[in-house]
Image (cartoon, rainbow, N blue to C red; front, side, top):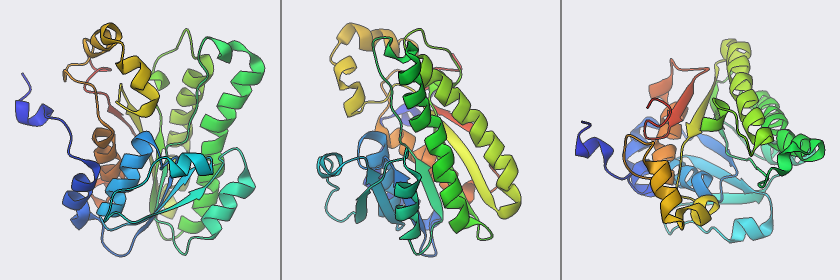
Length: 262
């Protein structure tokens, strides 16, 4: 049995970041796309608490305003649309330096709507092509200086979905894009990795969590017998962004309580 100390709930994101601060020295700068809500908000908070200068983006003023950061955590917030190269370029070009890029942006459309080719194209454009747009813009800032890019895949990157074909296909494609970029840019010192969150308690999953039967069914598949917290994922992301992962590139790190391994 896994020890209780190893399976305890995650630290709060700011506390996590403060503990990992010794890994992030030298005035580093990070761009967290989709960094104002859910898991992205936790990543932005942890990086900022670790001493990194963070720009966190959302898709709208409403989204940005709905997720304030706690006192003592300084995060610059701005709008960015990964479907628009000009929007990406505008945010990236405004940054004096760029060492870390975390791509949390993504979408899905429920009720089997993704079988519609137009919807499929839209979801894929955001989740997969958007990641390429962002990576290309980041490369121009990082080339020759090094840096770390972390993409957000999903456990659906390893399985199909009877309900979300575009989401599953785009996340599977994002995994292979991550590996491709890691191979292509390794000589420039740019590491490219991905995380695959499992069932994480976020605003997006709140309706599911209100269904006790559904929650029990999901957690029954998770060897670490609890729903994940955003900080669980943030810890893995910070590791991949840090010098502690300096020999790690092209990997998918599942953060799912052992669900894929079970």
